[in-house]
Amino acid sequence: MLTSYIQQVQRLLNDELAQFYSPSDLTQFINIARGTIAYQSECLIANGSISTVNGTQTYGLPTIAPPSGGYASAINIRSIRSIVSGVGAVLEVRPWQWFSNYYLTGTATAEAGTPTVWSQQTQGSTGAIWFWPIPNGTVAMICEGSWVPVALTTDSTPEALGYPWTDAVPYFAAYMAYLNAQRGSDATRMMNLFNAFMKASRGGATPDWLPPAFPPLRAVPGGEGNLGQ
Image (cartoon, one colour):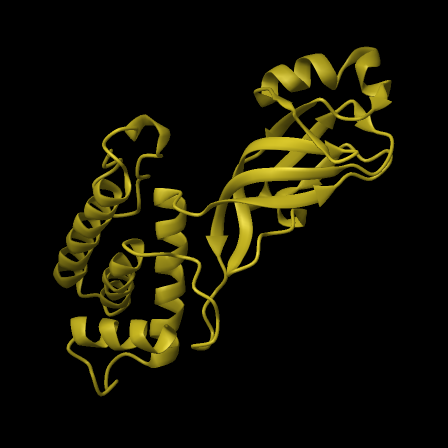
């Protein structure tokens, strides 16, 4: 897949012989594009897992084990289920300020048991999940969230992004390449094409019968903001 991406970007840059843009630079731009598409579209929604540790209340998002198939790390968590004796229980989620006010002050922080409430502190890769009560043992947690893909290094690296999102990758990579070469007008042209492909991908991937259940596109640097569905 990586070689195919590089060839597509080279064609967009009119640089099939790699005279002006090195494959190593294009690989970096391709991986930036893939991460951008993942967080902008939230197209990689999947279940990861984590096990609580006795007395440990907070767990960084990078410690949540990703699913197989090319997923790297979670960038947000949507829901958490605890698995006790083979039965799953959905934990209540609270906004961080609410959680902080009621569960991180007073005597509540001293309570221990199987967690029933969770909240996320800080966003992105440095985010952390907090549980209450404080875990008093090992409990398996299934965490559904939005993920970013692993970086492609060879053609054997699994590509987590699926069609139609893969169509947009070369355009954002070409945008990055033109920015790096200080070719602003060409970069703008590629960004416009990227936005068009992203909007088309969201429209094609979102069924008409249940559109509110699917996430909107996020803003990207130099883009047109939130493109909606």
